[in-house]
Image 1 (tube, helix red, strand yellow):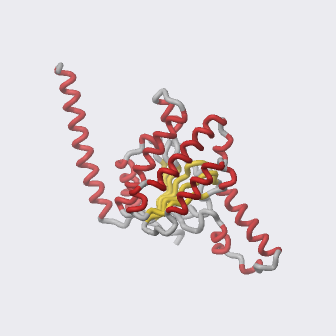
Image 2 (cartoon, one colour):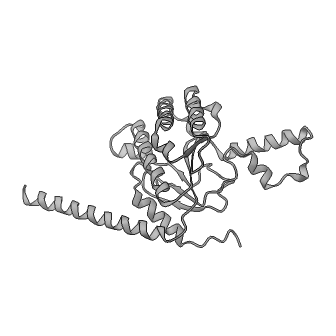
Image 3 (spheres, helix red, strand yellow):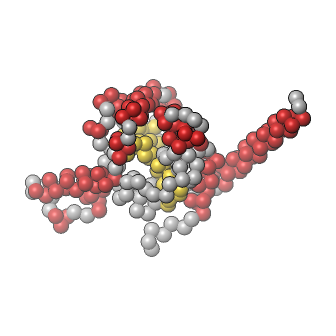
Length: 264
């Protein structure tokens, strides 16, 4: 091997060793402090990552789905109990038909894989799909139903996937439900409070302790607007398919260094 190539190979090996050592240290540091119980992630940057590699948008979504599988394991490994991911917004449904079709194909396949994945059953992972199922393609809605039914009794970890989801729409649907009960005499207006509203939300009242957005954008994009009122927010420049365990653990460590006062 030519000297420059040998030096490059040695440098890569050294970088790999240093990263493994650092990752081990990060895991140890995180284990010494309370971890977020509920993590929410806006999975952003799939298409831009694909373009940077000269690939099609659909390829970026496939790469992102592989990173999501790893993220689920990273969360479980440090003791997180709930992972909520923003995989498809109601606004995303307005993208080019070929991209939406490819996304639906991917969702249908991955949801069916969850039903057969022995890790899901061994670790008692409950799968829930949140959003408006009527806006999903029929086979995706059916795959979501199968995944939820196959894991309904599990309670060790909640994996919540937001598909055809929008927080404003979620709140509107909840308000309509409450208005129907008021009009029908089943609910007195003065008894309406935050708990009443949150009980009608499709994503429920479970507040994320930590909300991460990848891809470099700094906004919530209609995600968990009610539930994330006091979530700790982190924005990463890394496109989601390139998001690594070391990126995730650095964010968790920073989260542990913050003081949460909830307005008090």
